[in-house]
Length: 121
Image: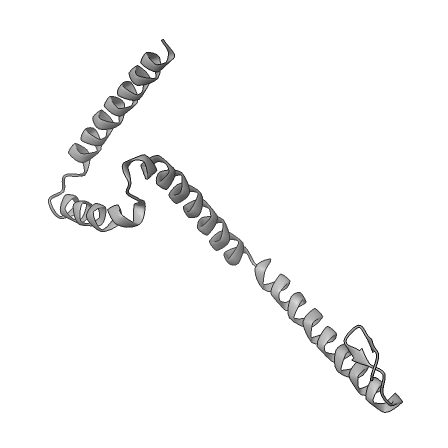
C-alpha cells in the first residue's frame, strides 16, 4: 500500500523527481499564461470593450428588472424594437418618434408617481 502526500505517491526518487519537474513546468506555463493575459487585458481597446460590455450588461439587467412584472424581457422585445427603429429610420421620423417617446416617458413617470402616492395613503 502506497502512502500519498498531496497528489504524489511515495515511489522511487526518480519518479518523485519527474513528478516535481512536471509540476514545476505546469506552474511556469500557468504563470506565463497569466502574465500574457494581464498584458493583453491592460491594452486600452480591451479595457474599452470591457467597459462597454459591462455597461450593456448593467442596462439590460435594469431593463429586465423593470420588465419582470410584465412577464417579458429585453430578449423578447428586441426584435420588435429593431423593426420599429428600422421603420423610423427609413421614413425619417426620428424627431417625431423622440417627441412621442418623451411624452410616453413623462406619462409613465406621472402614472407611477400617482400610483406610489395612492399606495402611501
